[in-house]
Amino acid sequence: MILLGIDTSCDDTSASVVKDRTQILSNIVSSQTDIHAKFGGIVPELASRRHIEMIVPIVNEAMQQAAVSFSDLAAVAVCHGPGLIGSLLVGCSFAKAVCFSQDVPLVGVNHLEGHILSLFLEEKRPEFPFLSLIVSGGHTSLYIAEGYGKYTELGRTRDDAAGEAFDKVSKLLGLEYPGGPVIDRLAREGNPQAIRFPRAYLPESFDFSFSGLKTAVLNHRMKHGMNPAHIPDIAASFQSAVVDVLVRKSEWAIKKKGIKRLTLSGGVSANSLLRMKMREMGKDRGVEVYIPSKELCTDNAAMIAAAGYHHAIEKDFAHLDLNPRAYLPL
Ligand code: KG4
Ligand code: ZN
Image (cartoon, rainbow, N blue to C red):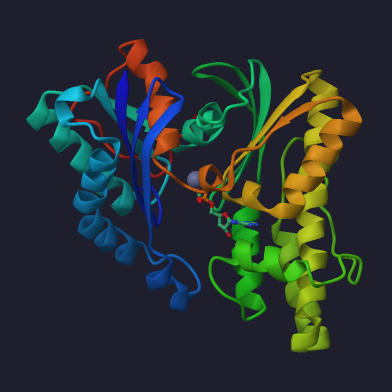
């Protein structure tokens, strides 16, 4: 069963062709970093306009690279939320137009389900049930996944998402957007113990909080000024605080829920320290830890097609009046 996946939820225009949930025939991602970088964050109106320019060439490229035609498709799976409404509208409108004109069924996929099921595109796949930690620019949430479509949220961030904290701290330090990759790189040259930034463990809760940490970095900068030589130490100390919280919370969830499988997904799961510390924790606790390859951590349409597969199998198709939703719980 061949599915075309489309994701325009945020600032990447992506189209992908996936066979039988697991086999990626193409996965094209057009990043908009160049247009948003000078603003230090995503400008929604610019994101929508770029999606409009890119959606046709990106879908064509995905179809050509996969060497399939629209008549080969069992369905088109499109991300219809959560995300930026103007961005989502472009992908949804385009997907509906393809389905209407080519007489192909439409599947609406929640972006978060895409992140959870991104692991099924890897050779090593988790069995249900597993704990799933999504850490991205828009979300930091912990779920129990008991089967396809059966996800129970245990906790979520009460303020900033982990990726948002990376992006905001990067801006505070006068670094580039997106902040995650640059902090990850600079942290390798810094001392993670140089500054003891706070860790919000929120005892007895599966929730997260990163806004206090961001404020602590701002206060440190105001108190000590901005000596460029200290930036790697600040980056390393900040990153280590985020990673400590994510690892300790996951460890606690494993203990409380007695589930010995954990998946990590979303853009922040590309972070090298997080990948290493999570794997170490898994080894110590006898837990299988699954982390996607870096291309599948950040937003991509292959994960939308992979998640669309079980909806298509169950004939859980959307009508052509499917509307995108900025807020769409799983
Ligand atoms: O999943 P994603 O592509 O988009 C959302 O759904 O939000 O995640 C983007 C986020 C950004 O905040 C970016 O700074 C962060 O992922 N990110 C990283 C790394 N690579 C991307 N954060 C930490 N370390 C990285 N290596
Ligand atoms: Zn995402």
